[in-house]
Image 1 (cartoon, rainbow, N blue to C red):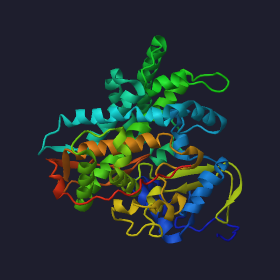
Image 2: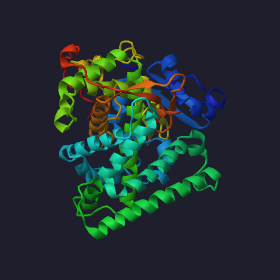
Image 3: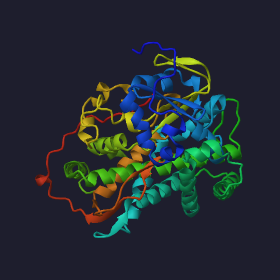
Image 4: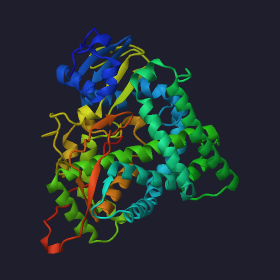
Amino acid sequence: MWPRRDKFPPGPFEGLKGWSFQALNESPLEMFSKPARDYGDIAGVRVVNFRNIFINHPDLIEEVLVGHPRRYIKGRVLQANRHVFGEGLLTSEGDFWLRQRRLVQPAFHRARINAYAETMVQYTQRMLENWRGGEERDVHREMMRLTLQIVAKTLFDADVARDAQDVGKSLELLLELGANFRRTLFVPHWVPTPTNLRIKREIAFIESILYRIIAERRASGRDTGDLLSMLLRAQDEDGSRMTDKQLRDETITLFLAGHETTASSLSWTWWLLAQNPVGEARLHAELDQVLGGRTPSLEDFPRLRYTANVITESMRLYPPAWGLARVAIEDHELGGYPVKKGMGVAMAQWVIHRDPRWYDAPEEFRPERWEGDFIKKIPRFAYFPFGGGPRLCIGNNFALMEATLILATVAQKYRLRLVPNHPVVPLASITLRPRHGVRVLLESWRSRPRETLPCVSQPTTQAMSAD
């Protein structure tokens, strides 16, 4: 498909004159989109002494993530943030990563995840008890608080919810600071700059809480049915268990996966629905037909097909993990070009998910596009919000169920109307979230009589990209 070349791929930027770190920090989505627009499936970018290949075709992405994943390690930004995430699943490599994956995997088996459905709905209902029609709220802040409470319950049990909220605030700050490309690549974390000292304080605060929780749980020996209980009991094939340091690293990683990403997905979903009355009406029609005014449950999850399609389409347009990066650890060839050890390889869900080759009207919000067998008609990695291959996000099923049940629970009672003139723009840090939040007016929703509702078809449930 790609002819063999002997040189570094052509690209739009040469050195800092063409691509400054200031521009990368201010508009990373545009800086990732431009090579795809101007140079197609593969482009080369040089920044100072870093050479990176941008791949913008699903087949090339599949080759990196699935075909030859052992040729690469995680990208430089995540490597530079290991002092935050430690050796958790997000950042660890090789045999150690494989061991940790085996130990953590049972905590995400389907039966265990299904047990959390009731918690997800209960905490959403608790949030709604404080909502009133006509109020103005920042729905991004509301979703952040809600998903934090859910992950606190499912990860640590409810008795540490207050501590978990403080941890969430610190983690949000660390994510924002950790995505500064110039700082993470050129300022080692041990240099005592004001920012690094602040990061050190936030990490120390998080660790003091996590180590206390771990010590209390080890001493009590209780199995409360949460993820921490599963991790404490997990045994490798040789009988070894996780150390306190390993537990610390994994719990911080799970806070990110179970809190920030789901909250951002829901925030973009409310924003998109508020601008698309046809899709919003169809969502309400399905909720009335499937639920009939009662609280959603685990059994309803597979029946909420259009609701799930709304989440899927939202994650296409605004994927929480908006880009992936790898560093080559051996010489090889990719897309016909030579890749040398130490060279970066980058790909962006933000770019691939908006490619008109795979999606009609790619900038439009169309949940109905996922009906039937559409997922089978596009390349495997034309849609990959959770990554792929061995490093596929371990919490993808948790996140999908959580987002769907929260959306169904809230939409039964409220429509969310956008506050005029409030700017909603993407902030591409380690995750993709609305920079200034999403301010909305709450409009109480009362189900109309069933006979007046438009007919809602029941398409096949769309399957997420998985390996």
